[in-house]
Amino acid sequence: MDKRPVVVGNWKMELSHKSALEVFSALEKMMKEKEFEVDVAVCPSFPALHAIADLAKHTSLTIGAQNIHEEDRGAYTGSVSVSQIKDFVSWCIVGHSEVRQREHDSDEMVAMKTRLLLTHGITPIVCIGETQEQRFDEQTTRVLLQQIDSLISALDRVSLLKTVIAYEPIWAIGTGEMPDSNEVYEVMLLIRKRISQKFDGDLADRVRLLYGGSVKSDNVGQYIAGAGADGVLVGGASIHPRDFFEIISNVSKHYAR
Ligand code: PEP
Image (cartoon, rainbow, N blue to C red; front, side):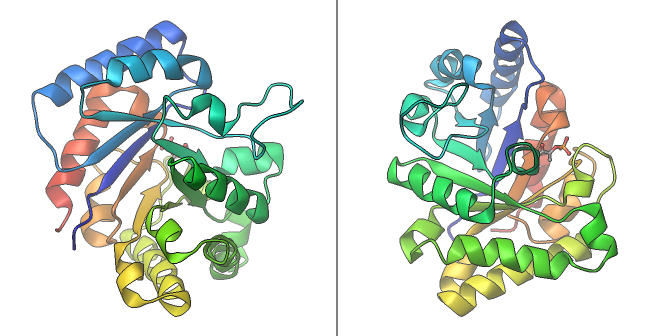
């Protein structure tokens, strides 16, 4: 299987401009010393994208955005379009639960943004996941299937192959509470089964699936080796260069090629 694992750092709104540059430089310094067979993306806030993209030139690190507006242009105060960032990023997170909740992004909207990114050659990292309440009500499978089906029915084979799907149980984001590797394994299987039903098993194997939610260097191994994820989406730990570097290193170590 010729896929590379992916580690994505979602810096959210945590860093000042100066700190963002410092965090990036510290990470880059560590990355320079090692060679990993891992795609690594950091996703700063919009104001830092340009500067960090400049620093990332000629490094092994790549840059992503945390969201985009679904329209390409227009009177949308406070929003940022794909055309405005496409020169700086190669990835973009869409459907993050914090955005879904705050901006009421529906599954259809997430699918629309995914397609828009693909037309601009940007790899979408599409987040799906259930709330704590849905988990307690045993609605996890139903909720995830709805999110998965909405996405895959909007994409053709080639587009889906270029898309990364991140399973992020909402209750695990920033909480230190995590699903065990069996639970994540079941979700990875569910996504692959759905892709296989709509397309075929080969595509289902090749689409990269990530886990996200309270990932740290000491727990990441179980999601890669145990749950069969192709990488991780990291929030809190990604703004600490040493921690993020250790996560990348452990993903590289545990990923079975
Ligand atoms: C996230 O923001 O996508 C995330 C997974 O955050 P954390 O790692 O802090 O749980």
